Length: 143
Image (cartoon, rainbow, N blue to C red; front, side):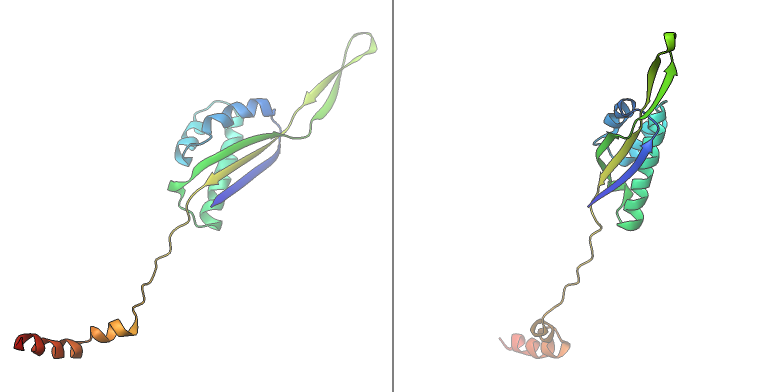
């Protein structure tokens, strides 16, 4: 079962966020949270929030065990770029690009197994009744 969580329009350049996302890819969720907690980057905080959202979705919506979850992929896509201009010499203007990104995390875990009830056929039940056992016992004693 796959669980996907996305945070869009994060005010952070995708290039900076990808460095952190590569570190946690393929790790168990508990290890990834530890790494993100102690990584001193803005991207670590934002990716951590998205990861916690994915964990909560897996636990509440899909009844998955959080101990078995693994990060399948952590993808950072480019969002829209805000374009601003800064005045320069001789009446010109220099562009300023304020980049945004979309953070997407996919978790993989196994669904809890349902307990299977084994139904016995009526013929087997009749053979194991106490009356059948008492009738079979004297026959064995005679032999």
